Length: 327
Image 1 (spheres, rainbow, N blue to C red):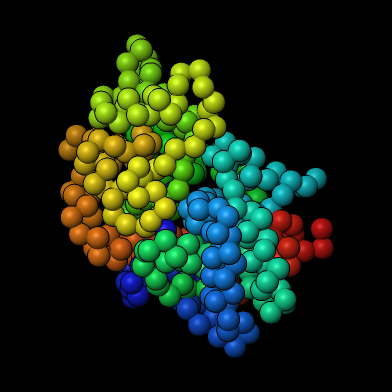
Image 2: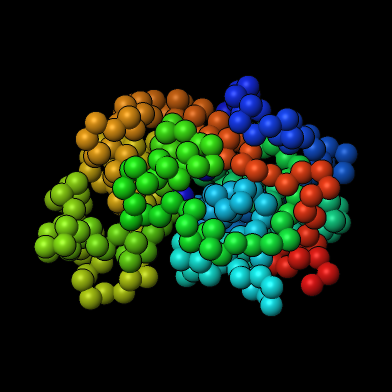
């Protein structure tokens, strides 16, 4: 599954996540690493020159990290004798990417301010930079997370929303981490840029209902286009734009696409095509008003970034995002 206007954190966030949440703040590195934002932005900007979809990939790492035991950088850890990497969980294997860019960011920050900035915070700052550089909003990222010494491959397999799920399952997974229906729709709007492999939606094209029929919520013209891109016996790894109109720009076209039955993933189209769903009105609102979408997206990114962070003396500041210190 990105980023906009400066928004104040509403009071209920503190209620949901406890007083420890107050330790996350936008000036956390003001004295210890004051150039963190410009350093991260510079590395992301350089990566975009050769990889147009890296921004979407980086925000997806942040999303997949936060849904598993909170925003603690656990998705970045490699396999060891004691760690089963989340990279090999179903939602991440052969699809999660951008780890090399995170390593490049970490190297740049270690050169500027050694052992100061956590890998979990790198994902949060890189997400804001990715959205902003793609034409989306900018916001003050709340900082101060520390890095986990453990990972949970099992948690990644069960907690991360997947593209084959219906709306009730998606809503339940968001609710489980304290995120609302509005957060679900706003954060899904990050699919306004990036790509998805054929294998993640090809069931919608040929045998969605189990009797050889396509998903009836796909427009006929879009169905024909996707069948050309993803033939029945073709490569499941072929990439397709999540937003066919402006695939590299962060805008609100994603929601107009849903209104036109052109959501690429089942989990996208479910937001608009599920009869009687509360998400429909939110989709319509975001489709008609980009600034409203941007404002809600920023708030939802802040909300997501506040999921169970490690604070104070918990966890560590990894010197290498791929491994626990001393390993």
